[in-house]
Image (cartoon, rainbow, N blue to C red; front, side, top):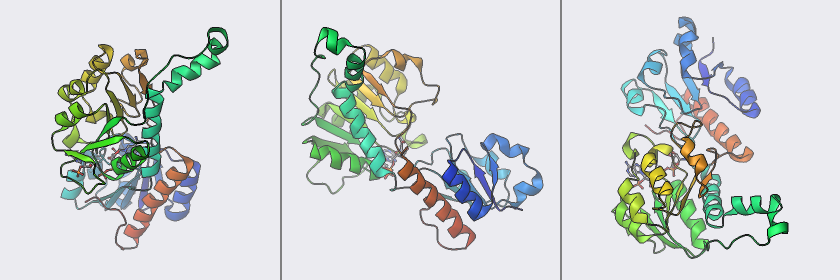
Length: 312
Ligand code: NAP
């Protein structure tokens, strides 16, 4: 009987590696746990988890001998760590290996928004370039004043990239960091007032829910652009939509939304919003590295060795 349960939808290379290493039981999501026999559930000691559906106390209680939930992804907000702690279950994630891709996408989204690349591309493809002439002038990105909200692993990589675009860097974190002279703001509203662009790189979960408030969004002002690569939950999304519709800010570039992939259709009506389908870490190379780290944590657990990237 297998001691490992693989939850979620995995790429072919991960499926073969999971089979070769652990011969796991596979289910598509936590809702399928109840369909497993009691004998199978009792045999499970490790879960590899991939997805955003909640995995909490009720799910853990269906697996009475569970010792580890190894998440595919750095953000483990779907997993109830407090419930895991209470049951002596370890949780691991996949930090660092995805920093470059997520930071690359954040910068690309910012440039795409300010240089209107989506509309400019449509202008050329539609024949307008040939029939009507040059695309309209847009907005210079280099040299902007940018505020990073959450200068963690990914936020730092974004800041390092934006420094190369000669941007004036400001940031919010709960404590001041060592930086090459970037401006620290302990008050997120003061940060929003000081910058043209806000890039949100916070952790997700209950502690940062609606961290980016209506007040912050409005403090950014009519030239303001918001880039979000964190989680849909970190922004007051209704306030963001209102501000975008009413021209209280200039635009947004978003990789993450509430209720993905059933995002609020109001977003589709907004030409000043760059929409990405939560693909921050979505390259072949990085997803392979994430899968490897997830499996390495499970292998360490089964071997009784120290976990590589435990979060509790
Ligand atoms: P990290 O190194 O832990 O950084 C997280 C940042 O959030 C830190 O600056 C931290 O502030 C801040 N923070 C944490 N709790 C907070 C709270 N209660 N209030 C205010 N600030 C708080 O995480 P990371 O590796 O950079 O990843 C960040 C997030 O990016 C992930 O959790 C995930 O949700 C998201 N992500 C998205 C994608 C995508 O595909 N779009 C891919 C990967 C990750 P301090 O410095 O003060 O501790």
